[in-house]
Length: 412
Image 1 (cartoon, rainbow, N blue to C red):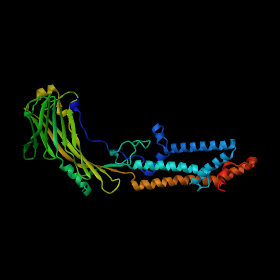
Image 2: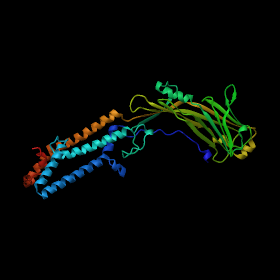
Image 3: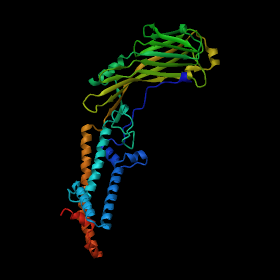
Image 4: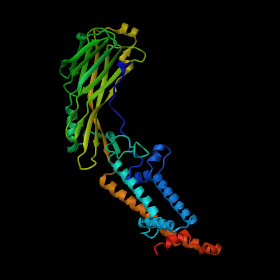
């Protein structure tokens, strides 16, 4: 069955991700914790929570030591720690020691946001990068995609002209293989059929090994009608048709090597009839990759084949072949023509360097402002309400230095 395996170079172009805004992507990756070990290990909010927990445990331990063991050294240590956190307070502008704790958390998540931004920026183009191990979703790419069909009748732009010229100038080599047959190279003739003449084409190579006849010929043009004739009356079990073409490159264009194969055989093991026709449509497929920086796009081009044929007309049973084989030869007609449209695939980065830097900077300011707003609400609304309730229900507690009161008056 390996002789009957078709080879295709066509592939489905990727879809754009559901999140195609860098702001949404950044927020999703900063504030989500996945269910796998990898997702947890790369989650910024997880490590920020771990930092806050560790610092709170440390502060509670120091506070317990101060309450349980009264000494000048312990008071001095507690005061030094409190001053260090006040010095790092970006939220309350140095007024609250607990603001220093929040500031350290903001610094950590901002640092991880910039680390994510740098890694995400370099995940482009999608086909040239590896897994995104810096994120929970390792398939995340800084790329969005678009694909459509365009008519060849529409004039193309000057920047696409080079890749069109490379495709039009690519030399085609016809690959023709007869499988499970006793036919030889001397009985095979491959010709070009035109409106006025039939021109025999010269073999580039021809071999006959283990019941397989393989021939290659260089085609003089892309749109062409080919006949392959076996002058002997020989049974053929299957055929394989393909095209080869060399690759080529310029500064901003790359023509891919052409090498596809299509096998034709009957699932019920019937025999190829003495006349068969195969139509091959060739469609240009052009991938345009937008620049991450600069203004010049990169183009890749290749031909995609489509075949039109009828297996029920090409293959007949052995008994039918014996009764109807009244010709002295077997002729395969191959019509090759370019389709009237081409496939245009377009890949662009979701965010470029300037946008990523600016959006990440805005994210850090957003975190800072959210914490500042939370502390302001606590200071102006929640703390006064708490003090009034405490004064009515537990007036004795107002004689003690509550931690909240200590935070508020620590700057005196």
